[in-house]
Image (cartoon, rainbow, N blue to C red; front, top):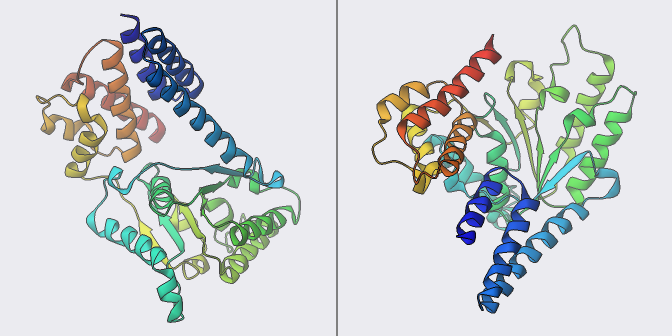
Length: 322
């Protein structure tokens, strides 16, 4: 049936992150339903698509002109239950959320909520996802600072851009993520450092210390040894991320595979082949397996397919290490 093919194409476009193709197929389904006499359903599908498009457009237009290209704005939809992390880390993230929700109570007692957070750990272990979860749980927009575009070769220009960003942090309440923070937070005593970068770091230290907004400022780094020690005392909390343990890897895969999970999967073998993979790598492997299952008209992801996709991620990791 045509509608069955459209539904499969709809799922493929979703996992391929092709929003325009997704909208097109959804509209085709709406047209099909209208032909079948289901006018109300067709109208509802079109309305959902129109609202989603308008929301995407509105989010993009909210950024000031001078911030476009320097800051990415998004409205994350990642709940806290989507992330599999150690209990101690989960408790600390929950504390940030709780303090923000009760910030007015704390202000009465001249206290401030945790809002300057440093996230440290290997790539793909959940640092950016944590920022997205905080944005979702606190119903705040998320602004990701494009650090590579922030740093320029012209003297004084980077500090001027930093000032614009911190003015925005004060003006527009949200989650502000400085990813790849090593680029501006490097140790000032490094011999190969240049004077301009020392001035940039000094400017950042000054701006973050003076900031008293209700926005959350999050800095993420894969290399804590490169960070200037003066940074650590400017943050209210420092969270350390690690590669997932066997039980965490299994739970993560169960969450992602969902209805595609094959009941006969051998978790002992999967645990071995997924060793040393990050949460992001496991996520990618599981989604690749789901796509392959869909394209091959399979109802579930079998153990062999999952091992194959995890193995590909291991090979890619080995290539990077070499």
